[in-house]
Amino acid sequence: MTAVLMDGRALAAKTKETLKEETEYMKKVGVDPKIATILVGDDAPSKVYLASKHRTAEEIGIRSENHTLSGFADEAELSDLIDSLNADPSVNGILLQLPLPQHLDSRRMIDRISAAKDVDGLTSGNMGLLFYGRASLIPCTPRGVMELLHHYTIPIMGSRVVIINRSTLVGKPLLHLLLAEDATVTVCHSKSRDLLGITRQADILVSAVGRRPQFVVTREMVRDEVVVVDVAMNRVGGKLLGDVDFEGVSPKASFITPVPGGVGPMTVIMLMENTLVAAAKQHNLKEASVLQ
Ligand SMILES: NC(=O)c1ccc[n+]([C@@H]2O[C@H](COP(=O)([O-])OP(=O)(O)OC[C@H]3O[C@@H](n4cnc5c(N)ncnc54)[C@H](OP(=O)(O)O)[C@@H]3O)[C@@H](O)[C@H]2O)c1
Image (cartoon, rainbow, N blue to C red; front, side, top):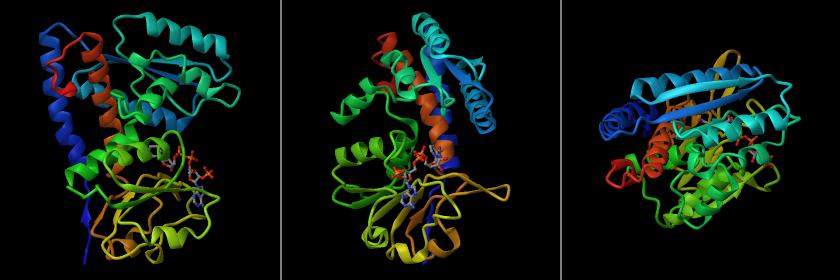
């Protein structure tokens, strides 16, 4: 059998059209959504990711602006910038590009962002709401994974899902989203024993390790008809690869995401959707379709 490709690029393009219409509607009723991003330092991959976020915002009609601080900026300087964006009523969403330079406390800086403008869904407050199934601003990558599973009508209720990742960005929020839809979820990490024994039981396997070539999801690690979601981004010899040995695993799988073109485009589009959700909530636009 050959797996069906879960085409994140196509789904993101389709979602983009819906978000364009939603943005037009919001502008007609007097709300002009805007996202502000913050870059500290000059990390090259961060710049590439930010450029793609600003490009997508522009295509949708969402206003966007970037604020760059020097890599030597201290917490006081970054806090001042975040405070000023929190207080600016024309800014609906704030994204702090990660990773921050080592001398800054990421958790403290993320928590400085107003929960209502936290379009990455990473503040402790929004994470807590996610735990209770009440969050409206949900971290973009896990949300993108859920959208892909829904779009391809992958059964989630009662399914055994294995996530290889326990980070705040990916594994922990995804665990809660899947639990809320009645999956049986196992979260693995670098200290997990018998990983192969665990992954072979998965109906749905989500891998987000990003340590290639040391870590690769091989054909032996999956069972027949598994659904594979590859979140990872590894640069190997100038090429972008996920965690999964695509050639080996796809003949065994029923569905699989490509890298690139799987979860990546969904992450960016979910950020845009979160920006519209934040804007709609701030203006009490109950009839906005992003709030339905
Ligand atoms: N496509 C997208 O839009 C998108 C978005 C976000 C992230 N990503 C990608 O996803 C990957 C993970 O990102 P992250 O920020 O979550 O990174 P991270 O914080 O470094 O998390 C990596 C996870 O992999 C686990 N791990 C490491 N080696 C392992 C091994 N040998 N066996 C099993 N688990 C192992 C780690 O375990 P410990 O916790 O024990 O260290 C950790 O939980 C990266 O490649 C990143 O580029 C992609």
